[in-house]
Each structure stands twice: as structure tokens, then as C-alpha cells.
Length: 163
Image (cartoon, rainbow, N blue to C red; front, side, top):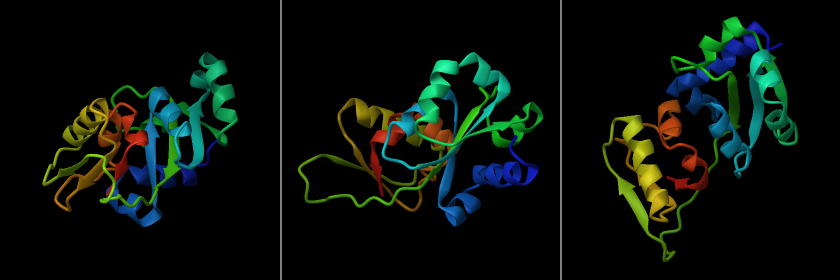
């Protein structure tokens, strides 16, 4: 069972200050965890409730091959979640440093001063649909590692490059 100290540490990653400081970010939900584990991002840990573990045995076998799994008490789930109805699975990933290749022949999208993380995630999803995999965000944009940005990208987040 995940200790109270680790629950507090991982829940701090819901705040930008700590994501920047630690170089890590948190994702929530089965689809996003799966996309993250299938990507080039490095997982630190996957955290699940007993209920989720029992109901998703086949998926948990997939997770075991790619990351450490730790259980969390049901009463601590809300501390890690920023959604109203958590699914009971979370993953912590290390941020990835990426350099965009401005000399490539691929299309690069530039976003400026988009404050809503949900809008950024939606734009990323649309970029992916058009085959655009590189996105430049100005300093005035919402943070790319914001849980709402990742959630609204619906997993596409893990297949794009950001700067």
C-alpha cells in the first residue's frame, strides 16, 4: 500500500510548481496510462486501487511488464485525482526533453497565449488527426503537463513533440 508520504508527494504533481521542480507529471485513467506506457516516456510508477486491479487483470499484466505497480487506499484516491469520478489508476512519468527540428519538412504548429489547458489538448488532438506531430507553445500558453491538457488530448499527447 502506498504510504501517506508518497501519496502526498505524488499528489503535489497536480500543481505546476511541483511538476516543474520534480521533472515529473501525473496521468489518470486507463486509456492515458496505456498510451503513456506504450510511448517513449519513462514511467516511474503506476498506482491503482484494489478494485481497479481486480476488475482489470489482463490490463494489469500489461502494466506489470512496463512499470512498478503500487496499490493505493480508496480513501486516498481523491488526493491524486483532479476529476470528479476517478477510475482508480494513475501513472507518474518523467518529463521528456525534446528539441523540435525546424529544418524538417514536417509541419510545425505554433500556439500563442492559449490559457485554457483543455483547449490546448483539443488542438493537439486535432493536430494529430492532420498528421502534425510537432507543436511549439509560447510562454503565454497553459502548461503542456497540466493533467487537464493531457486528459483532453485523449492520449494523443504521448505521440507528439512539444517545445
